[in-house]
Image 1 (spheres, helix red, strand yellow):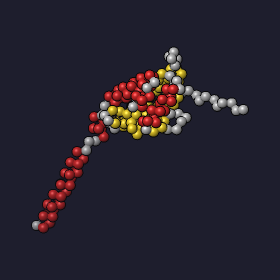
Image 2: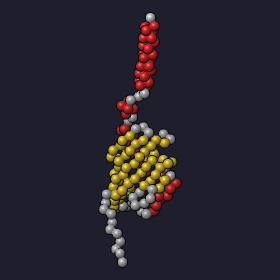
Image 3: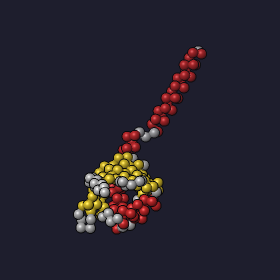
Image 4: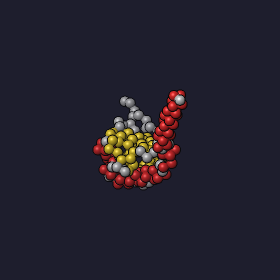
Length: 171
């Protein structure tokens, strides 16, 4: 009799533990379920819209609106320069590019990876002069994060596809 009570108790405990494990596993959405609910096409379209706002502002000489597309804790990493952190300093760096007469900028997302909290975006960019002649082109990798309900640039690094200019002659 005692053995059968112990068997019943151990069976009840085992069934309870298994039930709790099954319930906890079933309550957590799987990675596939999360991926199924995230719309990468819509995310890429949102990035394209944000890029359009950025390039229109940049091309009009509006560094404030251009910098508004960056997250509060963003980092801007242009080639051959030290990284710049925070919207205020990023706005100053963008203003420097504008004042240097860089030209008109276009940006095209190529591929997007990520989820609803962070996206990695590979892009191609082109600069043209006032006549429409291409002056430079290159690629970038960016991290975008959701901030205040909008995708904002979190990390921005880019470089040219053109060869580096030769160093100045030595005297």
